[in-house]
Amino acid sequence: MTARVLMLQGTASDVGKSVVTAALCRIARRRGLSVAPFKPQNMSNNAATCADGGEIGRAQAMQTQAAGLAPQVDFNPVLLKPHADADAQVVVHGEVVGSLGAADYMAGRGRLMGPVLESFERLIDAHDLVLVEGAGSPAEVNLRDSDIANMGFARRAGVPVCLVGDVDRGGVIASLVGTRTVLDPDDAAAICGFVVNKFRGDPQLFEGGTAAVAGRTGWPCFGVIPWIPEASLLPAEDSVVLDLPRRQARQGLKVAAPVLPRLANFDDAGPTSIA
Image (cartoon, rainbow, N blue to C red; front, side, top):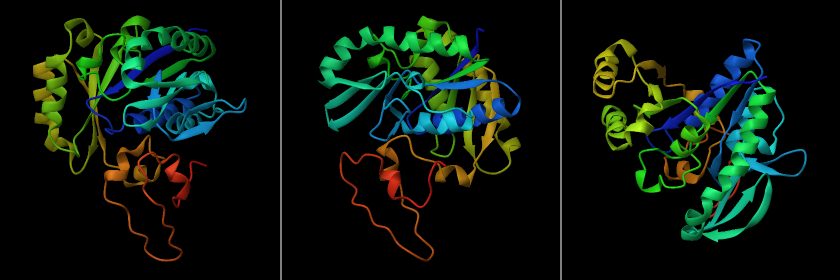
């Protein structure tokens, strides 16, 4: 079996790549497809444990539930768990291989493409569809050399990319068009289209916006995804959400958790779980 593959990359962190990937996993599963999520490299202190004791990012564990699978290390072969501003624990295929400073990791991360491709090959051999999630944004062109998380992986594996933009944060037209502007032409050619995420109101009112992006980039719009309040209750990918306004409890028991710089698995103290 050789799976069909689509990669979702974003114009920035926290644009909704993880939730869109999970949603597509659930849609594919309901249509009778064997689908698997995949994130080549994740940076998060929110980790989940697999049956063999290995660790993967919490968001990938949530996506496996959407796909009807049990967590396994191939879904997230490289996990970085920061424990200082410029230092992180490096987990490969679920096992800690050491701690590296940011400069040392960037200098040597190209060697991790091998383990990433090993996991990817196993998944495409075992499933009908593999949905790949990027990390951060391909617009971070200063990180393009030896990249294994975004266009470096997409180009190496020959995977088409759908770019996700977040209209809720504002400036989505500029972020999508700007990404096209800064990308290497060959990287830009790997993008087959875009979606606009977190839209509030009547999507017909944004038809001019999607046309403007399509006209300036040459990429078709695959859809406008509405704002879904319940999506905010899903486990967060990383600590970037801790800087956002907190939801206030209406009544009942209140649980307080200190927001520490390297807080791990902080959603364990929340009112919901990924079950």
